[in-house]
Length: 124
Image (cartoon, rainbow, N blue to C red; front, side, top):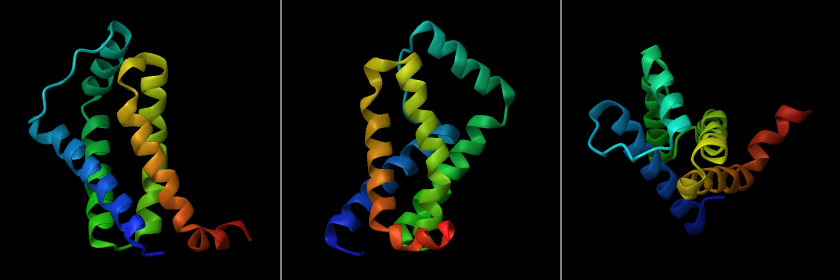
């Protein structure tokens, strides 16, 4: 379960989450130009005052857990709803920029598959 391939996947996912999670607080990456409906949706999330910071905290926490190789199975489960929502956002509102979303979802799925024995007790 701790093969080099798994370590690389875990590190890559953690790096992506850490950078984009911190960006929700520090704004060091410029916001890309979004289509009209996607921009409206993001404005709505930003207007709540809590959704994007909460997602940022979860992304940073998950990335730290993945980097430290602690509670990895739990961290991957925390990431499932976020990664699905990132994918759905891009599928419905910003299809040209879907590559990053696909990468996060695929990495999450692969790592869950690699840690599947830890999840089997949930289904008994």
